[in-house]
Length: 613
Ligand code: F6R
Image: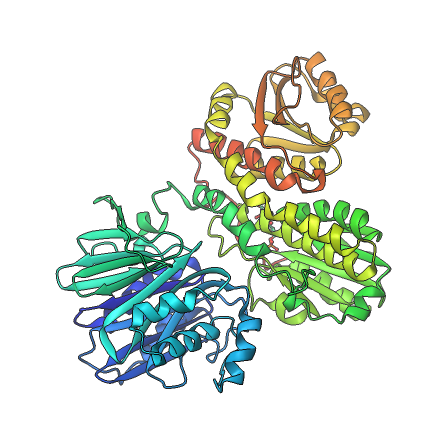
């Protein structure tokens, strides 16, 4: 997730920008860059040397212009185009007088780029961002001022963005605009700033403001003017910054820890993963997939390999791949696949799923698959990760970096990314027509709002967590796609609460584990799908005196079903339901762990990236 800072009216602008970038480092990045307005020219430095880019930048900035008071800085989390210096921001226009940084995704960048090139603009990167700087350049050439030029340019853009621009021709102005991606402004005595989040601004100004969607700000030393995309003036939304906030508190954006912040970022993670996936004819396109369409058409089996929560996302995908693409799908624990003799060949598509893209077990399973001649695709949240480099194709989740060890927003983003993969296979194999693919994409697009709705019910989960105080044994039950949800609920609970928790397919209960169900045991049952079958399994637990918590969609009859009900919004297609039903289970694990006083971000014995076998 990129980080942006812009300053004006600030002595030592470069130091303020570097300090801001350091405060934004926690968001994760793979390259960084700065530009300063130096009299009538622009000065720019960029670095893309892995994890120490801001430090590298500080090193290479030696010959920086001393007196500059206006500039912008950026940490980039690559999406379109690899993490190279050429793709790092700021991007310059053709005149070299204009510098621009961007966070988000420009959905129609390909269609905007063609006419811009036709009018003679020269592109120097593979990014979606670069169209923006040339669009602003054209508006400036037509006579607009900087903020006005940005406003007009943004009118042509589809997608999600926060964007900040400076020009050597207006050395006291920072212009900024946003849609769906956070951007804050701050004004102090003779200074003005903008940044992606409050951590970069804390302590630097007296007044803070949040830009809203489709607003454009003109920041000058000591002043802020905001208009909407139609050009009408608007009153900026003031933000109260808690005086007790230090940089770390600000990075958590007021949440107590990264885990709850990341749980609340899930609607955005899902929405961003779905962005920019439809071509001009409405067909599903996955730009980064790289594997030739003919190879994918020839596939006769899909094997998904992953670990932990990523494995559970793969299990959800099995149902989608089988139903939509009509392909046999297997899901394998990565550490198991490589030590048997898996039957893989050039028509087996092997899909690795990994938040980090570095997990050794998954990496080695993918290498094993490649040795067998199978085409490999990795679903990764990190663009330059080893697996993303080695696999034949990639599909990026765009959840932004996950700091908390327990995966939440990446898990949801993985499920929707794998749904996209299943749909693209269905589209190319012809098992679903364009209308059916389009209808499923529409349903996917409705998920972020449903996840938001589920998050809005956290108080219900808190009440259940209070009632469960003291319980130490949990079973999580589900059927069909509810089964991987149950596994994920159990995994979250054990990871951060250290309570015993097992996930089971509900129909399996009576084949053994029912012997363990007695008063004091908690059974968490995911009602959707196969509600009737689930009701029978829940009754088996109720009859043995378990405390039963049912996760049920709105409208489902839950009379007599258990002790507690956690309602979730109804999802149109049951295959997509896990994206919503897992949310109360994450919240429950979190609430129980907090009540036990555990460090939810850094659970004992666990690491975020597991590079050992
Ligand atoms: C669970 C969790 C782990 C990871 C697993 C795989 O909350 O975070 O189970 O899912 O270690 O990691 P990645 O996805 O990075 O390959």
